[in-house]
Length: 297
Ligand SMILES: [Ca+2]
Ligand SMILES: [Ca+2]
Image (cartoon, rainbow, N blue to C red; front, top):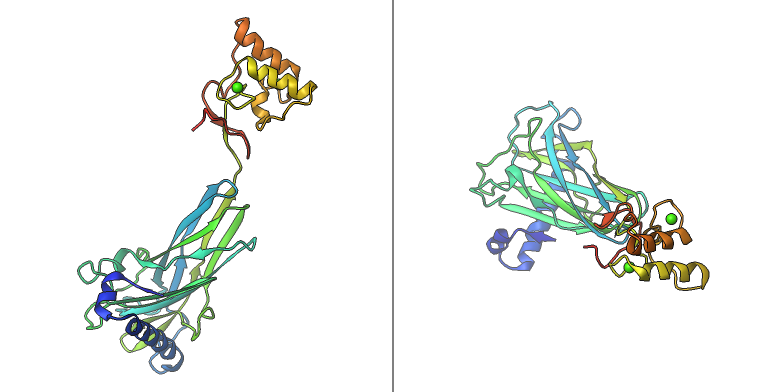
C-alpha cells in the first residue's frame, strides 16, 4: 500500500493512512454495489484501457516496463464531471513467469490537478498478481475531470520481471484480487458508474539471445593473431579447449570451423592476405548467447 508523499504528510500516521485508504476502498466498493438508484444506467459508461508495450532483451536480463492506463467515456453520459475513480487490475504471463508490479502513480491530467500537487487522495495496494487504486481528486470538491475520447493516460504502473523466453503479459480488469474487492467504478457526484474493459494492457516480451564478437578472435583475447590460429588447430586436432565463441573462430565466414580458418588467419597476418569478413575489426552483434570478446563493449 502506498500514498503519494504529499498526502502522507497530510494524513499523518501510518495507521491513519491505512484507515483512510481502507475506508475509501470500502466506500467505493459499497457504493458500486449498493447505490443502484444513483448508478448511471446503460452498462459501463466508462472504459478502462492499458497501453501496449514491448521489450527486447537477452535471457536473464532484468526488465522494467511502464504501462499507462486511460479512462474514456463510451458516450453514454458524455461530459460528466467525475470526482474520483477506483481501479483493480490483475496481470498474468502466458509462460507463467513471475511478474511484480510497483505501486501505480498518477500521470497526465491527474498529476497536474490541485496546482500540480496531484489528487487529494491516491491510495494504492499491490499484490502478487495486480494492483488496486482509489482516487479522490479533492476532498473539498470543486475539482473534476471529464474523460472524452482521447483523454491522456492518468495512471502508470511499472512491471518488473526477468526475461526468460518470448512471452506476453496481459493486464485486465479484475475486482477479485483484493479483500474486500475494489470495484472498477468512476465516481460522479454521489453516483458511481461502472467501468468496463476497453483494451487490456499488454507487454510483449521478445527474448533475443545475442552478443558482440569480432571475427577471427577465436580465443577471445581481443586480438586476431597467431594465437587464434593455434587455438583453432589445438581445438580441432589436439583436444584443446573449446572456444566460447565458435562463430568468431569461423574466420573466413563460410559457416564451418575447420583448418582453413586457421590458414586464413595466418595468411592474413603473415602473408598479406585479406582481413576476416565483418564483423572485423569492429565488434557487431551475431554472436548468439555466449560470445563476448573482451574487445567489445
Ligand atoms: Ca585472439
Ligand atoms: Ca570457416
